[in-house]
Length: 585
Image (cartoon, rainbow, N blue to C red; front, top):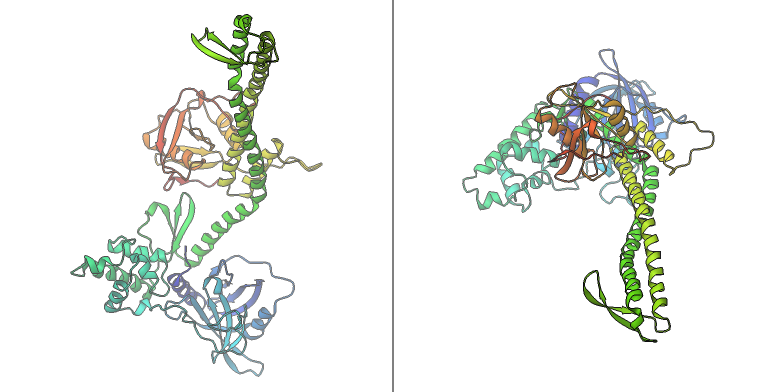
């Protein structure tokens, strides 16, 4: 993921085609580091341009969405309104392949004279800014003020001259020749892909890997390969040809925006095709703005759900840690009870042979008629043989009672641990607030959260994931224990197939057969879903149990999502669900 110079070039091309000649109709500042410009374009349409200088998420793109503005506009917003309202956009440019957008605007001042202003957007991570300049390139103001105390490279303050800081010794890739390319790449000792993006402005690691892929070169190879083994320069020529081909696309504005998904989640995006990823995992867009809006919306949704689930995760983690400590202590106590049979045998042998024990003896040797071996029994010299026997029988009885109690308690605590781990897994796969609502309801019903006085049970709107196999069979994945029970025991028919990760918490996966026989590919795809939506999703391979649903049973009084089965098939599968079609829930 990178808002690199090539992405900026695609944005600039789109903005130039769409907004040049348009007039700035509204200016809002919804956040302290964000602007929303409404522009009436030359063709009479109204477009919105979102600009953010957020340190964590700087961006610029066209959007249809509006945002609530504060009641009182910030001073920077008021300044822009004074100068730019009803101003006409004359040009939008990008210097070189820098992550900078310059919006040139002409407007009439108070005297009615035509003036030129420049709104500069710098997309540079934590150094991102929105700077307002006059036609002499002097800074009028900026959304973030940077003094010399903060940066020794450049001050961004009213009255200062504006310039692009050359903080890194990088070349412009749009003007690179083969000779300069050769010197740069062969002069560095690092992976080839890193040598490319660290030497040229505006290139991200993703694009650098793509250049290597198109050249048929492993990007992780050391750049030293070109001096050590590439005597004829063939590899370097191929790499430069790939590099030049990519830069020609940028120069000519030939963009093909796409998002790459990994296991249904957005992983990367680029303004140029990412051929190193399979096409099945890519989603193409005709507009770079549409791509950016969708990508960041999906990323924001995942982050928002993570933030909203923090309290639930803390409750589950605290309860889990408490139960794990309790379980470890119980297992240790169980281990101690293993001595009980030894004490019983001591008591029996003392009752059998104790008449031979001399008063005050500290031990007795006797034949253990269970093993036919001689053993030594420790004695309390102050007690008689029968009293020593009673003492050992008392110890045996106490340990036996402890063992019987712990045999039940350890099972209950282990079930509680498994239940809490299954809730943890459900929190990991939650994508919507409705998913969290259902998990919270389960925690309330399990006694981990107290329902507020008078509060009614919340209506559940979350639904299982719905996938379709490559052979057209419908596959359903429970997002939490309530949905797992619903899927398995209310939704699935007896001859539908049921899948679950073996021995670890995870989702129930049901494949609807409608009386048909499933092909092998559907079995494998359903198993992949069961592996991915389980605690083992980070492993290379996960063992999956599968069987017909009619053989899955739920014990009376068991926890939500808990089932038993005795006859099943198993397979080892990787948890990669890329390419499996997810239907709209």
